[in-house]
Length: 279
Image (cartoon, rainbow, N blue to C red; front, side, top):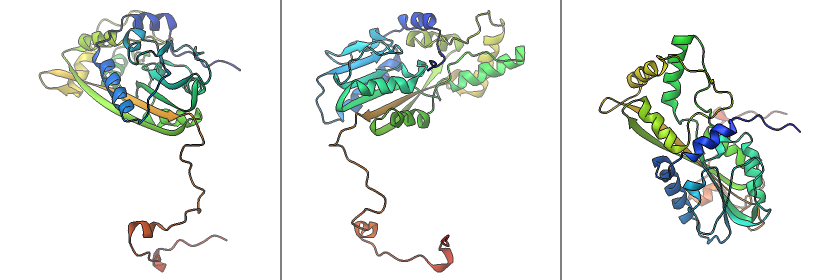
């Protein structure tokens, strides 16, 4: 079986991640959100694991956790953990469903998987401004911003990975930047600069970033003559299947009518709006 084509240049991605700062606002927000979600789970986890390419940011997230890199083959033993956190790495994976399958296999029955990754709304303003500026100046486009999954698509991966009770939700963050270089410096601190394998290695036109900044400021203004930038964090939650978990009922197997639960009177549909049956 052929391996999925790599999205990232591994050397560039590794260099970018080595520069990531633990106090980057994006990582702090992701950590806070995950802690909040874990606090709502009425369970004590004793064998956690963390999958991440940013150990300097995430290694201390859970005391005593096993921390492994987000390599194509995860260094996790089957059934060894009751909690796996996949932290800010899934958007760079060539095979995200494979990452989730391996994380699920590392869980004990009824163990919990939680993942956080950047979503498709991230850098929407920069993507638009850079594309328009490059099209104007060169008549073409270069891959400058990583394509990231939408919440519906990422949520569907949980079921494909065999996880039970799947939930996907997102948090949208907006920041104001004084200029494009200020935004690029923040990306550097997050470890999220362009590391795509297909990126153009040649020097960009001198006027590209100046023109992109003008377009960005004009179309996505923020207070104080700044530029608006969006970051979307998508959170995925699923459980390793277990017989103790709630199971869906067969269609038509309900023992009570909805009208009884609501305390209302059930009325037949008027003939005028009935849908004819097909023989």
